[in-house]
Length: 201
Picture 1: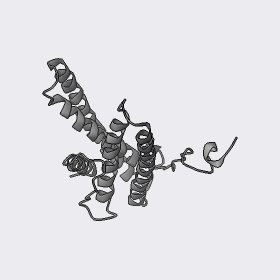
Picture 2: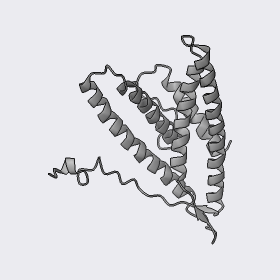
Picture 3: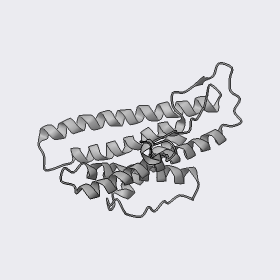
Picture 4: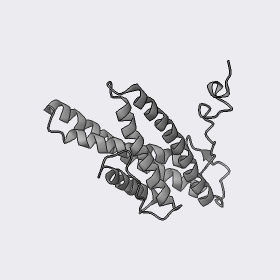
């Protein structure tokens, strides 16, 4: 099993584990050894899954404004946790490939491996929830058929993205491409960079 296949397996497991209770405040029960790459992949998808459901809740047109603000703050923190974790996973790849001899004609990729896995993690959530839509009994046949077509596209996208990621890892491992990681420079959470937070008039 290659790394991307293993990641797909972990993401799928995480989504299923969450939906055993489908409760945003349920404690995470990460089955992998702490600080292992498998541990971080499971945690990454868990964060994405909880945030997916927070995004659903906050779109309730009848939500209490105070509750909505609390959820918005929680989503902001989740986004920061997600970004921090992506950078941590990229650190794993930087260490893994640190001794690779980069070829003279090597090229840089448009995104780092961890950000590609971020997209794959979200894709698992889209697939899970679109599949749920195809199994509904309270809607019409047109809706079911439309969702089935979307599900087939998502499954194709998962296959294509998995192939592309594995090819990227192989290119990096063999020096045909190289990694360059830019730390996220988010400004809105930084009290020194957000004018609202540092009190600029």
